[in-house]
Structures are given as C-alpha cells and as structure tokens.
Image: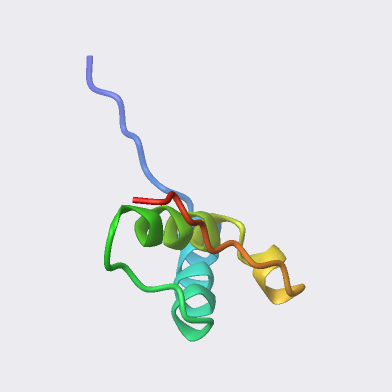
Length: 60
C-alpha cells in the first residue's frame, strides 16, 4: 500500500516567509550555533517580526 504524503500549500508559504524573514534579519549559517538560530527563526518567524532575538550562543 502506498501513502501519498504531500505538503500543503499553507506550509510551503509559511516556510518561504520564514526563510525571507530569517535571512533579512541576519540569520545566516556559519556554524552549529548559527544553524540552530536560523532554524528557530525559520519556524518561529512571527516572533522575529515582533522583535524577539533568537540568536543562540552555544559557547563552542
């Protein structure tokens, strides 16, 4: 039996907006800490728009 797992259009739009918001607010990927910050900003982009700083410092 084959299951069709498709991503909804709303999810794609949400992630595209998150990508644009994250990149325009200085969330880039250079190391593990910045990767985690970028992923947080990607999924929690409404908080970024409200001014929440999601930059992580792992002390590496």
